[in-house]
Image 1 (cartoon, rainbow, N blue to C red):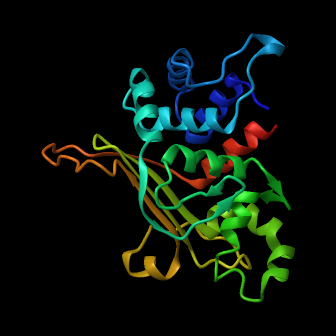
Image 2 (cartoon, rainbow, N blue to C red; image 1 turned 135 degrees about the vertical axis):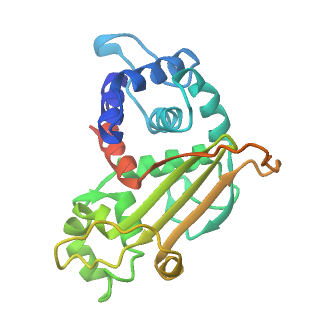
Image 3 (cartoon, one colour; image 1 turned 90 degrees about the horizontal axis):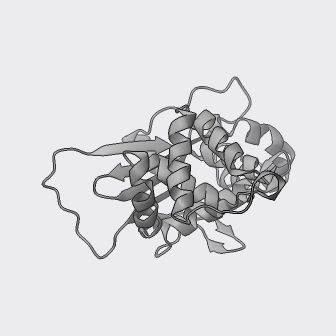
Amino acid sequence: MALLSTLVKAVAEIEGIDEVQVGWVARYLREAGLLSQAGRGRGAAHMSATDAANLLIGVNASSAPKDAVRAVEVYRELVCTDSIGDISSEDGSIFALGTSFGDSLEMAISLAAEEFGGGSELEWKILIRCNFINPRGISDFDDRFGVLAHNFGSIVRSEITFCRPNSSVILKISETGWTGTDQPPAPPPFDEDEERSRLLMQALYRNSETDYPTSGDRFDRTTISLSTLSRVGGVIRT
């Protein structure tokens, strides 16, 4: 299990942002009791899926480190009000209607932390849904899974978008059409005409009791992918 310093460094490297900035986010969250705390050295707290989820929300849903605590409090409580497709874990359906974003993110990271046949259980549960890479049935898919998981980012296009200032999260997972037989192409952007045929999952998280104001002219978005969850899951697994 990783220590906080290891998780901070990993998130900074994975997302390509300043480690000092991630460290400040972590400090604010830890002081607010939103990250595990224990002693120092060998007695320091080991990071869980909850810690990883809170750090990712704090980093990606806040405009500044000092706003991270409020961002975690707000975004964790957003509710899935629109869902197409789903995957399940031991804790339940991940992207089901009525599920909070905090719970969805934790369950996804937990699956990403489970090693499975050369990849992660999260990758397996998503790739098994791809029509384009599994034309000959599940037995063939199992044989190919290690290679497919290695090329997950080319086979599956994914976006987890944190929207501000009207707090919401949009999740999209779609297959690109690559079968894993040739050189993988760069993942194409979502195309409106092809999205329906290749869409695997989609979920919208928002405050279901509030109609957001539209008076402001600024709309910020920060987007990460499932690759971030997979790599963070790998970090907390080690």
